Structures are given as structure tokens and as C-alpha cells.
Image (cartoon, rainbow, N blue to C red):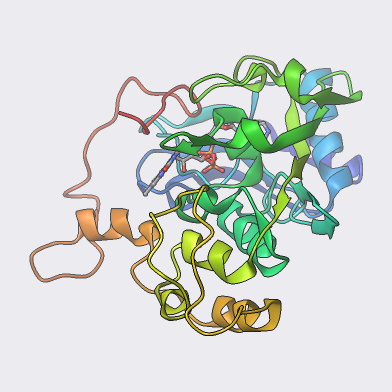
Length: 290
Ligand SMILES: Cc1cc2nc3c(=O)[nH]c(=O)nc-3n(C[C@H](O)[C@H](O)[C@H](O)COP(=O)(O)OP(=O)(O)OC[C@H]3O[C@@H](n4cnc5c(N)ncnc54)[C@H](O)[C@@H]3O)c2cc1C
């Protein structure tokens, strides 16, 4: 993309980082694939709108990147603009039984925030290594639990600059899909409606092994069982303390484990060993389920 075009994006007031021919591999779970013609990292919510308006005005192809845990980038790279929204849209607010989370917030961290407030319903999200935006677009889920079933509303930036609120029924959530998979635009944030529950029971369902000491064993991530405290009823403070502790053996670690070489540790997919990916374009494939 010619430099004057990049200057144009900057000139419009985009405050984040703009890089030409920037490798995308570091921003995806699989760490493979070529560069983005332009990689724009939004620093503020306004940047997201600016970048989309810029791309639409200039008829430049554009795509949104969440945490890159559900996409492959082909070796040839991606033409046009790739917009990273993680940091610009990472706010999370809890109000009673409702959590409003920015599309860039990590889905596991939103699940933990829910647990810290004694709110049940997003425990399945603790092991899904994406953003809220990615979880909405893909209707991410685990067994019978899925993101869409907890969504009250999704705020979506249309390519013409309009911000539209989609009530849950308009999101057309289906198995690992939603209206936003085919609709051009950016998921900005989502409101989730949750249920008050025993905080320590929520922590157990999140997969915190430490929490199990205080509860009878409950089915992994099950929603039905509330668990039975052995000693009194554990409270919010105790659950918060547990949630602050480092987590061990979580599902996020699984991929690393699968990729680990014989010597253990993370596999180094250096240029020699790097598999060729020819036909896959960013955002066009589901790695999960395969
Ligand atoms: C180890 C591992 C475990 C996983 N476990 C599960 C699981 O249990 N259940 C499950 O459902 N999935 C699972 N996944 C897949 C993946 O984590 C989810 O689909 C996740 O929701 C993708 O989020 P992301 O932010 O990484 O999206 P990305 O991979 O960055 O993007 C996916 C798609 O969503 C679009 N997108 C992302 N953010 C936005 C936005 N704000 N606005 C518009 N479009 C956007 C992108 O353009 C792209 O088309 C797993 C993946 C890995 C690597």
C-alpha cells in the first residue's frame, strides 16, 4: 500500500500503530503465515471507527483480528488492512447480573471476572483462548454451553460508520457461527446476562483445582451442580483469593502441550520447519472444531 495512503490514515487521527508489510504470524496461535499489507493496531475505540471508515472510503479490503486463535494466515499474506482491536476495546464492567465486555477483552478473563462477582454462566469460556469479539463471531462454546446463550445484546460497527445494537435473536447464533461471520463490520462489545451463584462453585467450574478443596467434586464446567461445601459456605472473598492465584493445568495450555517437541517446551516452528499454508485466508477457516 503506498505510503501516502498510510499517511492518510494517520492524518485522519488514528493514534495506534500502523505498520506496512507486518508479519501476522506473531499474532496468531499457530505462529505461521505471511504479512499484512497494513497492520493497524487500534489504541482507542475511535481508532476502530477511523480505520474502518478509511478502508471503506479507499475501497481497501479490511479484516479484523482478535486473538488469532481461530484463523490461519496464508504464506502470501493478506492484502489490505488488518485491524487489531484487542487493547482498544478491552473494557469489562459488571453491573448486577450483567457483564458488558469490550470485543478486545480476553474471553477467559471475562469468565474470571464473572466468577469473582459470583456470577455463573460463562465458566466454559475459561478455556477458550480468544477475545470476546471472536467468541461472539464464532459463537464459541464447550459441549452444550455456548456464548450466544448468554448474550443479551451485541454492539456492532457497520462499514458505513453506524453503531447498531443487535438483540440476541438478531445475532442468529448457531453452531460455531453467528450473523457476524458474514456481515461486514466490527463487534465492539457485548452484554452478557448471568446468574448469581455460589462463588466458590463457580470457581470450581472454571477449573480452579484449588477451589475443589472446599467443595464436593462437581462435574467439569457443569452448570447444574452447585457443589456442597464441606465446611460452612465459602464466600466471595475466598473465591476472589483463589482466583488471584496462578492457574495450573488449564486448557489454554493444551495447544502448547500438543506442539511441544520431544524435549518438552514450546515447539519452535522456525522457517525451516514451517509448514506451507497455501489456500487459507485469514478469517476464512475454523480450526476448531476441525
Ligand atoms: C487451544 C485452543 C482451544 C480452543 N478451544 C475452543 C473451544 O473450546 N471452543 C470454541 O468454540 N473454540 C475454541 N477454540 C477456537 C477459538 O479460540 C475461538 O473460536 C475464539 O472464539 C476465537 O477468538 P479470537 O479472538 O482468537 O478470534 P480470531 O481468531 O482473531 O478471529 C476469528 C474470526 O473472528 C473475526 N473477529 C474477531 N474479532 C472480531 C471483532 N471484534 N469484530 C468482527 N470480527 C471479529 C475475525 O476476523 C475472524 O474471522 C480454541 C482454539 C485454540 C487454539
